Image 1: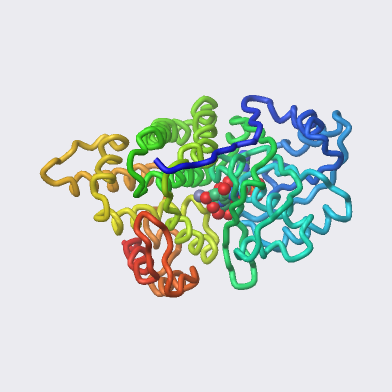
Image 2 (image 1 turned 30 degrees about the vertical axis):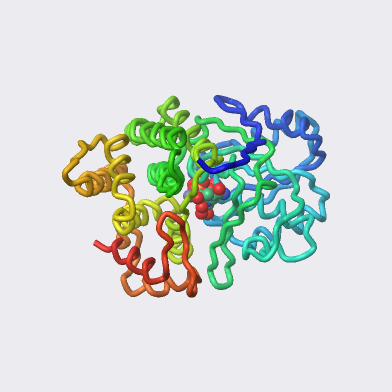
Length: 390
Ligand code: NZQ
Ligand code: ZN
Protein backbone atom coordinates (compact mmCIF):
# COMPACT_ATOMS: atom_id res chain seq x y z
CA UNK A 1 0.00 0.00 0.00
CA UNK A 2 1.30 3.50 -0.83
CA UNK A 3 1.60 6.31 1.71
CA UNK A 4 -1.35 8.68 1.78
CA UNK A 5 -3.10 11.58 3.50
CA UNK A 6 -6.87 11.48 3.63
CA UNK A 7 -9.14 14.21 4.87
CA UNK A 8 -12.84 14.28 4.08
CA UNK A 9 -14.04 17.45 5.84
CA UNK A 10 -17.61 17.46 4.51
CA UNK A 11 -20.40 17.16 7.05
CA UNK A 12 -23.04 14.72 5.71
CA UNK A 13 -26.63 14.98 6.87
CA UNK A 14 -28.50 11.94 5.58
CA UNK A 15 -32.12 10.84 5.56
CA UNK A 16 -35.78 11.72 5.12
CA UNK A 17 -36.70 15.39 5.36
CA UNK A 18 -33.13 16.52 6.04
CA UNK A 19 -33.35 19.36 3.51
CA UNK A 20 -35.37 21.31 6.09
CA UNK A 21 -32.14 21.64 8.12
CA UNK A 22 -30.37 23.58 5.37
CA UNK A 23 -30.97 27.04 6.90
CA UNK A 24 -29.49 26.03 10.27
CA UNK A 25 -26.56 24.28 8.61
CA UNK A 26 -25.74 27.39 6.57
CA UNK A 27 -25.98 29.49 9.72
CA UNK A 28 -23.51 27.19 11.50
CA UNK A 29 -20.92 27.89 8.78
CA UNK A 30 -21.09 31.61 9.59
CA UNK A 31 -22.18 32.51 6.05
CA UNK A 32 -24.30 35.62 5.65
CA UNK A 33 -25.52 35.49 2.04
CA UNK A 34 -26.11 32.49 -0.19
CA UNK A 35 -26.24 31.82 -3.92
CA UNK A 36 -28.73 29.02 -4.56
CA UNK A 37 -27.50 27.29 -7.73
CA UNK A 38 -29.62 24.73 -9.56
CA UNK A 39 -30.33 23.05 -12.90
CA UNK A 40 -33.06 22.98 -15.50
CA UNK A 41 -36.13 22.88 -13.30
CA UNK A 42 -36.45 19.49 -11.57
CA UNK A 43 -35.98 21.13 -8.16
CA UNK A 44 -38.76 23.62 -8.91
CA UNK A 45 -41.14 20.93 -10.13
CA UNK A 46 -40.55 18.75 -7.07
CA UNK A 47 -41.07 21.66 -4.66
CA UNK A 48 -37.55 21.18 -3.22
CA UNK A 49 -36.44 24.70 -4.10
CA UNK A 50 -39.35 26.18 -2.15
CA UNK A 51 -38.52 24.05 0.88
CA UNK A 52 -34.87 25.12 0.72
CA UNK A 53 -35.85 28.79 0.49
CA UNK A 54 -38.30 28.42 3.38
CA UNK A 55 -35.55 26.91 5.52
CA UNK A 56 -33.13 29.74 4.67
CA UNK A 57 -35.87 32.30 5.39
CA UNK A 58 -36.57 30.69 8.76
CA UNK A 59 -32.86 30.89 9.64
CA UNK A 60 -32.74 34.53 8.52
CA UNK A 61 -30.23 33.86 5.72
CA UNK A 62 -30.64 36.09 2.64
CA UNK A 63 -30.07 34.56 -0.78
CA UNK A 64 -30.00 35.11 -4.52
CA UNK A 65 -30.72 32.37 -7.06
CA UNK A 66 -29.17 31.24 -10.31
CA UNK A 67 -30.82 28.33 -12.12
CA UNK A 68 -30.28 26.85 -15.57
CA UNK A 69 -27.17 24.69 -15.06
CA UNK A 70 -27.05 22.21 -17.95
CA UNK A 71 -26.27 18.53 -17.49
CA UNK A 72 -22.54 18.45 -18.38
CA UNK A 73 -22.34 22.06 -17.16
CA UNK A 74 -20.61 24.69 -19.23
CA UNK A 75 -18.40 27.70 -18.51
CA UNK A 76 -21.10 30.20 -19.53
CA UNK A 77 -23.14 29.93 -16.33
CA UNK A 78 -19.96 29.80 -14.24
CA UNK A 79 -19.01 33.27 -15.47
CA UNK A 80 -22.57 34.49 -14.72
CA UNK A 81 -22.38 33.01 -11.24
CA UNK A 82 -19.00 34.58 -10.49
CA UNK A 83 -20.31 38.00 -11.47
CA UNK A 84 -23.49 37.58 -9.44
CA UNK A 85 -21.63 36.45 -6.31
CA UNK A 86 -19.25 39.39 -6.51
CA UNK A 87 -22.09 41.89 -7.05
CA UNK A 88 -24.23 40.46 -4.24
CA UNK A 89 -21.40 39.76 -1.75
CA UNK A 90 -22.33 36.11 -1.57
CA UNK A 91 -20.20 34.12 0.86
CA UNK A 92 -21.55 30.57 0.39
CA UNK A 93 -22.80 28.75 -2.70
CA UNK A 94 -25.57 26.22 -2.16
CA UNK A 95 -25.96 23.75 -5.02
CA UNK A 96 -29.40 22.14 -5.11
CA UNK A 97 -29.35 19.30 -7.62
CA UNK A 98 -26.92 16.80 -9.08
CA UNK A 99 -23.27 16.67 -10.01
CA UNK A 100 -23.74 19.32 -12.68
CA UNK A 101 -25.08 21.98 -10.30
CA UNK A 102 -22.50 21.04 -7.67
CA UNK A 103 -19.60 21.15 -10.14
CA UNK A 104 -20.78 24.51 -11.45
CA UNK A 105 -20.99 25.77 -7.85
CA UNK A 106 -17.44 24.56 -7.19
CA UNK A 107 -16.20 26.39 -10.31
CA UNK A 108 -17.94 29.60 -9.23
CA UNK A 109 -16.46 29.10 -5.76
CA UNK A 110 -12.87 29.12 -6.99
CA UNK A 111 -13.62 31.78 -9.61
CA UNK A 112 -14.95 34.48 -7.27
CA UNK A 113 -11.75 35.22 -5.31
CA UNK A 114 -9.49 34.71 -8.35
CA UNK A 115 -8.48 37.68 -10.48
CA UNK A 116 -7.85 35.68 -13.65
CA UNK A 117 -10.09 33.37 -15.68
CA UNK A 118 -11.46 30.44 -13.63
CA UNK A 119 -10.70 28.20 -16.67
CA UNK A 120 -6.99 28.46 -15.70
CA UNK A 121 -7.75 25.86 -13.03
CA UNK A 122 -9.51 23.47 -15.42
CA UNK A 123 -6.86 23.82 -18.12
CA UNK A 124 -4.20 22.90 -15.58
CA UNK A 125 -2.47 26.29 -15.70
CA UNK A 126 -3.08 27.25 -12.08
CA UNK A 127 -4.11 25.84 -8.71
CA UNK A 128 -6.73 27.67 -6.66
CA UNK A 129 -5.57 29.08 -3.34
CA UNK A 130 -9.01 30.17 -2.13
CA UNK A 131 -12.65 29.34 -2.65
CA UNK A 132 -16.04 30.40 -1.43
CA UNK A 133 -17.47 27.51 0.58
CA UNK A 134 -19.83 25.23 -1.34
CA UNK A 135 -22.66 23.24 0.24
CA UNK A 136 -25.07 20.83 -1.45
CA UNK A 137 -28.58 19.41 -1.34
CA UNK A 138 -28.18 16.33 -3.54
CA UNK A 139 -30.98 15.08 -5.81
CA UNK A 140 -29.29 12.24 -7.73
CA UNK A 141 -26.90 9.47 -6.70
CA UNK A 142 -24.24 9.54 -9.37
CA UNK A 143 -21.22 11.83 -9.67
CA UNK A 144 -20.22 11.77 -6.00
CA UNK A 145 -19.47 15.49 -6.23
CA UNK A 146 -21.24 15.93 -2.87
CA UNK A 147 -18.12 14.54 -1.20
CA UNK A 148 -15.42 14.77 -3.84
CA UNK A 149 -12.54 17.13 -4.42
CA UNK A 150 -13.38 17.35 -8.14
CA UNK A 151 -15.44 19.41 -10.54
CA UNK A 152 -15.94 18.90 -14.28
CA UNK A 153 -16.87 21.78 -16.61
CA UNK A 154 -17.18 22.03 -20.39
CA UNK A 155 -15.75 25.06 -22.16
CA UNK A 156 -18.35 25.79 -24.82
CA UNK A 157 -15.84 27.15 -27.28
CA UNK A 158 -14.14 24.01 -28.60
CA UNK A 159 -16.23 21.63 -26.41
CA UNK A 160 -13.42 20.94 -23.95
CA UNK A 161 -14.79 18.95 -21.00
CA UNK A 162 -12.15 19.08 -18.31
CA UNK A 163 -11.92 18.22 -14.62
CA UNK A 164 -10.29 20.09 -11.78
CA UNK A 165 -9.20 18.26 -8.65
CA UNK A 166 -8.26 20.15 -5.51
CA UNK A 167 -8.87 19.36 -1.82
CA UNK A 168 -10.04 22.92 -1.23
CA UNK A 169 -13.25 22.38 -3.21
CA UNK A 170 -14.81 19.60 -1.15
CA UNK A 171 -18.24 20.78 0.04
CA UNK A 172 -18.52 22.04 3.62
CA UNK A 173 -21.76 20.14 4.07
CA UNK A 174 -23.99 17.93 1.96
CA UNK A 175 -27.60 17.01 2.59
CA UNK A 176 -28.52 13.57 1.24
CA UNK A 177 -32.20 12.70 1.34
CA UNK A 178 -32.71 9.51 -0.70
CA UNK A 179 -36.42 10.32 -1.12
CA UNK A 180 -35.41 13.26 -3.32
CA UNK A 181 -34.09 10.78 -5.89
CA UNK A 182 -37.48 9.09 -6.28
CA UNK A 183 -38.53 11.56 -8.99
CA UNK A 184 -35.64 10.59 -11.28
CA UNK A 185 -36.52 9.01 -14.62
CA UNK A 186 -35.23 5.45 -14.91
CA UNK A 187 -32.51 6.32 -17.43
CA UNK A 188 -31.00 8.90 -15.06
CA UNK A 189 -31.16 6.50 -12.11
CA UNK A 190 -29.37 3.86 -14.17
CA UNK A 191 -26.81 6.30 -15.59
CA UNK A 192 -26.05 7.50 -12.08
CA UNK A 193 -25.55 3.92 -10.95
CA UNK A 194 -23.15 3.23 -13.82
CA UNK A 195 -21.15 6.31 -12.82
CA UNK A 196 -20.96 5.08 -9.22
CA UNK A 197 -19.73 1.67 -10.38
CA UNK A 198 -17.24 3.35 -12.73
CA UNK A 199 -15.76 5.35 -9.84
CA UNK A 200 -15.08 2.03 -8.13
CA UNK A 201 -13.56 0.42 -11.26
CA UNK A 202 -11.24 3.39 -11.79
CA UNK A 203 -9.75 2.66 -8.39
CA UNK A 204 -9.95 -1.13 -8.46
CA UNK A 205 -7.79 -1.56 -11.56
CA UNK A 206 -4.41 -0.68 -10.08
CA UNK A 207 -0.81 -1.79 -10.21
CA UNK A 208 -0.36 -1.22 -6.47
CA UNK A 209 0.10 -4.48 -4.60
CA UNK A 210 -1.21 -5.45 -1.16
CA UNK A 211 -4.31 -3.26 -1.10
CA UNK A 212 -6.61 -5.88 0.37
CA UNK A 213 -8.68 -3.48 2.47
CA UNK A 214 -9.52 -1.12 -0.38
CA UNK A 215 -10.06 -4.05 -2.79
CA UNK A 216 -12.58 -5.50 -0.36
CA UNK A 217 -14.30 -2.13 0.16
CA UNK A 218 -14.60 -1.73 -3.62
CA UNK A 219 -16.07 -5.21 -3.96
CA UNK A 220 -18.58 -4.57 -1.17
CA UNK A 221 -19.79 -1.39 -2.86
CA UNK A 222 -20.11 -3.10 -6.25
CA UNK A 223 -22.05 -5.98 -4.70
CA UNK A 224 -24.34 -3.41 -3.09
CA UNK A 225 -25.01 -1.85 -6.49
CA UNK A 226 -25.75 -5.27 -8.08
CA UNK A 227 -28.16 -5.99 -5.24
CA UNK A 228 -29.91 -2.62 -4.89
CA UNK A 229 -30.15 -1.18 -8.42
CA UNK A 230 -32.59 -3.83 -9.74
CA UNK A 231 -34.85 -3.08 -6.77
CA UNK A 232 -34.99 0.60 -7.70
CA UNK A 233 -35.55 -0.19 -11.37
CA UNK A 234 -38.48 -2.41 -10.34
CA UNK A 235 -39.82 0.10 -7.82
CA UNK A 236 -38.56 3.71 -8.11
CA UNK A 237 -40.12 4.48 -4.71
CA UNK A 238 -38.05 1.86 -2.84
CA UNK A 239 -36.61 4.27 -0.26
CA UNK A 240 -34.27 1.77 1.39
CA UNK A 241 -32.68 0.70 -1.90
CA UNK A 242 -32.37 4.38 -2.91
CA UNK A 243 -30.72 5.07 0.46
CA UNK A 244 -28.16 2.30 -0.01
CA UNK A 245 -27.33 3.52 -3.51
CA UNK A 246 -27.06 7.15 -2.42
CA UNK A 247 -24.54 6.39 0.31
CA UNK A 248 -22.62 4.04 -2.00
CA UNK A 249 -22.35 6.94 -4.45
CA UNK A 250 -20.73 9.13 -1.84
CA UNK A 251 -18.36 6.48 -0.47
CA UNK A 252 -17.39 5.44 -4.00
CA UNK A 253 -15.99 8.87 -4.78
CA UNK A 254 -14.81 10.74 -1.69
CA UNK A 255 -11.69 8.58 -2.12
CA UNK A 256 -12.02 6.45 1.02
CA UNK A 257 -11.71 3.42 -1.27
CA UNK A 258 -8.94 4.89 -3.40
CA UNK A 259 -6.32 5.82 -0.85
CA UNK A 260 -2.92 4.10 -0.86
CA UNK A 261 -3.24 2.86 -4.42
CA UNK A 262 -2.53 4.07 -7.91
CA UNK A 263 -5.79 4.90 -9.70
CA UNK A 264 -6.47 4.81 -13.43
CA UNK A 265 -9.11 7.35 -14.63
CA UNK A 266 -8.49 6.93 -18.35
CA UNK A 267 -12.07 5.67 -18.92
CA UNK A 268 -13.40 8.94 -17.49
CA UNK A 269 -11.21 10.91 -19.91
CA UNK A 270 -12.40 8.74 -22.79
CA UNK A 271 -16.03 9.18 -21.68
CA UNK A 272 -15.83 12.96 -21.29
CA UNK A 273 -15.32 13.16 -25.04
CA UNK A 274 -18.55 11.20 -25.60
CA UNK A 275 -20.67 13.37 -23.31
CA UNK A 276 -19.09 16.54 -24.75
CA UNK A 277 -19.75 15.51 -28.38
CA UNK A 278 -23.08 13.69 -28.11
CA UNK A 279 -24.58 15.47 -25.07
CA UNK A 280 -25.32 12.16 -23.33
CA UNK A 281 -25.41 11.48 -19.60
CA UNK A 282 -21.91 10.86 -18.24
CA UNK A 283 -22.93 7.55 -16.64
CA UNK A 284 -24.48 6.29 -19.87
CA UNK A 285 -21.20 7.06 -21.63
CA UNK A 286 -19.26 5.15 -18.98
CA UNK A 287 -21.46 2.07 -19.50
CA UNK A 288 -20.24 2.13 -23.10
CA UNK A 289 -16.59 2.88 -22.31
CA UNK A 290 -15.82 0.54 -19.42
CA UNK A 291 -16.48 -2.86 -21.02
CA UNK A 292 -14.34 -1.81 -24.00
CA UNK A 293 -11.55 -0.50 -21.75
CA UNK A 294 -11.66 -3.75 -19.78
CA UNK A 295 -11.41 -5.92 -22.90
CA UNK A 296 -8.50 -3.82 -24.17
CA UNK A 297 -6.46 -3.83 -20.94
CA UNK A 298 -7.30 -7.18 -19.33
CA UNK A 299 -4.16 -8.92 -20.56
CA UNK A 300 -2.08 -6.58 -18.45
CA UNK A 301 -3.30 -8.33 -15.29
CA UNK A 302 -5.77 -11.09 -16.07
CA UNK A 303 -5.82 -12.26 -12.45
CA UNK A 304 -7.16 -8.90 -11.24
CA UNK A 305 -10.01 -9.16 -13.74
CA UNK A 306 -10.62 -12.78 -12.73
CA UNK A 307 -10.68 -11.67 -9.07
CA UNK A 308 -13.41 -9.13 -9.90
CA UNK A 309 -15.28 -11.78 -11.91
CA UNK A 310 -15.30 -14.30 -9.08
CA UNK A 311 -15.74 -12.03 -6.08
CA UNK A 312 -18.29 -9.62 -7.56
CA UNK A 313 -19.93 -11.25 -10.57
CA UNK A 314 -20.16 -14.75 -9.12
CA UNK A 315 -18.12 -16.46 -11.85
CA UNK A 316 -16.38 -19.77 -11.18
CA UNK A 317 -12.62 -19.55 -11.40
CA UNK A 318 -11.20 -21.42 -14.36
CA UNK A 319 -7.69 -22.10 -13.07
CA UNK A 320 -6.61 -23.60 -16.38
CA UNK A 321 -7.82 -20.53 -18.25
CA UNK A 322 -8.15 -17.40 -16.04
CA UNK A 323 -8.74 -15.25 -19.12
CA UNK A 324 -12.01 -17.12 -19.66
CA UNK A 325 -13.09 -16.15 -16.14
CA UNK A 326 -12.03 -12.55 -16.68
CA UNK A 327 -14.02 -12.34 -19.91
CA UNK A 328 -17.07 -13.85 -18.26
CA UNK A 329 -16.93 -11.12 -15.60
CA UNK A 330 -16.97 -8.43 -18.28
CA UNK A 331 -19.87 -10.17 -20.05
CA UNK A 332 -21.82 -10.26 -16.79
CA UNK A 333 -21.18 -6.56 -16.24
CA UNK A 334 -22.53 -5.82 -19.74
CA UNK A 335 -25.54 -8.05 -19.15
CA UNK A 336 -26.25 -6.32 -15.82
CA UNK A 337 -26.05 -2.83 -17.30
CA UNK A 338 -28.20 -3.87 -20.29
CA UNK A 339 -30.81 -5.33 -17.97
CA UNK A 340 -31.02 -1.92 -16.27
CA UNK A 341 -31.64 -0.22 -19.61
CA UNK A 342 -28.15 1.20 -20.06
CA UNK A 343 -26.42 1.52 -23.42
CA UNK A 344 -23.29 -0.62 -23.79
CA UNK A 345 -22.21 0.12 -27.37
CA UNK A 346 -21.21 3.33 -29.13
CA UNK A 347 -24.18 3.17 -31.51
CA UNK A 348 -26.56 3.00 -28.54
CA UNK A 349 -25.61 6.60 -27.65
CA UNK A 350 -25.62 7.89 -31.24
CA UNK A 351 -21.87 7.40 -31.66
CA UNK A 352 -20.42 6.82 -35.13
CA UNK A 353 -17.30 5.01 -36.27
CA UNK A 354 -16.29 8.03 -38.36
CA UNK A 355 -16.11 10.20 -35.21
CA UNK A 356 -13.49 7.99 -33.55
CA UNK A 357 -10.36 9.74 -34.73
CA UNK A 358 -11.85 13.12 -33.72
CA UNK A 359 -12.83 11.76 -30.27
CA UNK A 360 -9.39 10.29 -29.62
CA UNK A 361 -7.54 13.33 -30.96
CA UNK A 362 -9.63 15.80 -28.96
CA UNK A 363 -8.35 14.31 -25.70
CA UNK A 364 -5.11 16.01 -26.67
CA UNK A 365 -2.59 13.38 -25.59
CA UNK A 366 -0.11 14.29 -28.31
CA UNK A 367 2.87 11.98 -27.78
CA UNK A 368 1.88 11.41 -24.14
CA UNK A 369 -0.32 8.83 -22.43
CA UNK A 370 -3.33 8.73 -20.10
CA UNK A 371 -4.15 6.42 -17.20
CA UNK A 372 -1.83 4.35 -15.09
CA UNK A 373 -3.06 0.73 -14.98
CA UNK A 374 -2.08 0.60 -18.66
CA UNK A 375 -0.81 3.99 -19.89
CA UNK A 376 -2.74 4.59 -23.11
CA UNK A 377 -1.48 6.36 -26.22
CA UNK A 378 -3.83 7.97 -28.74
CA UNK A 379 -3.66 4.82 -30.83
CA UNK A 380 -4.68 2.71 -27.80
CA UNK A 381 -7.61 5.07 -27.23
CA UNK A 382 -8.66 4.61 -30.86
CA UNK A 383 -8.51 0.85 -30.28
CA UNK A 384 -10.79 1.22 -27.23
CA UNK A 385 -13.32 3.39 -29.09
CA UNK A 386 -13.37 0.73 -31.85
CA UNK A 387 -14.12 -1.97 -29.30
CA UNK A 388 -17.25 0.00 -28.34
CA UNK A 389 -18.75 -0.69 -31.76
CA UNK A 390 -21.16 -3.54 -32.14
O1 NZQ B 1 -31.26 19.99 -14.46
P1 NZQ B 1 -32.41 19.38 -13.74
O2 NZQ B 1 -33.72 19.89 -14.16
O3 NZQ B 1 -32.21 19.43 -12.24
O4 NZQ B 1 -32.46 17.83 -14.17
C1 NZQ B 1 -31.42 16.92 -13.91
C2 NZQ B 1 -30.61 16.59 -15.17
O5 NZQ B 1 -31.40 16.68 -16.32
C3 NZQ B 1 -32.02 15.59 -13.59
N1 NZQ B 1 -32.31 15.40 -12.17
C4 NZQ B 1 -31.42 15.49 -11.14
N2 NZQ B 1 -32.05 15.15 -9.98
C5 NZQ B 1 -33.33 14.88 -10.31
C6 NZQ B 1 -33.50 15.05 -11.69
N3 NZQ B 1 -34.68 14.82 -12.30
C7 NZQ B 1 -35.73 14.44 -11.55
N4 NZQ B 1 -35.62 14.24 -10.20
C8 NZQ B 1 -34.45 14.44 -9.56
N5 NZQ B 1 -34.35 14.19 -8.25
O6 NZQ B 1 -31.06 14.63 -13.96
C9 NZQ B 1 -30.24 15.14 -14.99
C10 NZQ B 1 -28.80 14.90 -14.65
O7 NZQ B 1 -28.38 15.73 -13.60
P2 NZQ B 1 -26.82 15.98 -13.39
O8 NZQ B 1 -26.62 16.91 -12.28
O9 NZQ B 1 -26.20 16.32 -14.72
O10 NZQ B 1 -26.32 14.48 -13.02
P3 NZQ B 1 -25.03 13.90 -12.41
O11 NZQ B 1 -25.07 13.95 -10.94
O12 NZQ B 1 -24.86 12.59 -13.06
O13 NZQ B 1 -23.83 14.87 -12.85
C11 NZQ B 1 -23.18 14.71 -14.08
C12 NZQ B 1 -21.99 15.62 -14.17
O14 NZQ B 1 -21.05 15.33 -13.13
C13 NZQ B 1 -19.75 15.14 -13.72
C14 NZQ B 1 -20.08 14.54 -15.05
O15 NZQ B 1 -19.00 14.59 -15.95
C15 NZQ B 1 -21.26 15.39 -15.49
O16 NZQ B 1 -20.82 16.61 -16.04
N6 NZQ B 1 -18.91 14.38 -12.80
C16 NZQ B 1 -18.47 15.00 -11.69
C17 NZQ B 1 -17.63 14.38 -10.79
C18 NZQ B 1 -17.15 15.09 -9.58
N7 NZQ B 1 -17.40 16.37 -9.48
O17 NZQ B 1 -16.51 14.51 -8.69
C19 NZQ B 1 -17.14 13.03 -10.99
C20 NZQ B 1 -17.88 12.28 -12.04
O18 NZQ B 1 -17.03 11.29 -12.56
C21 NZQ B 1 -18.41 13.08 -13.17
O19 NZQ B 1 -17.40 13.28 -14.16
ZN1 ZN C 1 -17.89 9.68 -13.14
